[in-house]
Length: 141
Image (tube, rainbow, N blue to C red; front, side, top):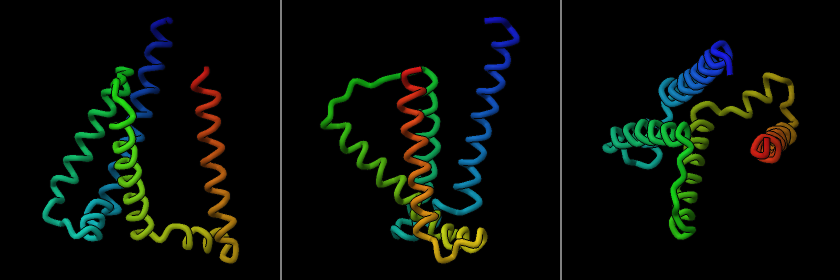
C-alpha cells in the first residue's frame, strides 16, 4: 500500500468516525434523549450514571472494534447481554419517537398521511435489505 493510499484510508476512517460521533452526540444532547429516558423510568437521580455508561461503553466498544477483539463467552452470558442491549436500543428509539414524533411528521411532510403503514414497512424492508446486504456481501468480502 502506498503512502498516499494509507493516508487516504486514515483520513476516510477518521472522517467517518468523527461524523458518526458527532451524530451520536447530537442525537443524545440536542434531543435530550438521556434526560427523557430518566424521566420515563423515574431514575432522574442516576442521570450521571447513564451519561458515563454511554461514554464508557462507546469508548470501550470502539477500542474493541478497532482492535478486532473477541471475547470467548458462552451463550449463558451472551443471551442476557443481547437482551440488555436490545432493551437499551428499544428505549432509545422509544425516547426518540416520544421526543420527535418522527413518523407522523415525516408522513405529513412527504404527503403520505394516509399511508403511514406503507411508510413504516418501507423503512423496515429497507433496513432489512441493508442489513442482509452488509452481512451476506461485506462479511464474505
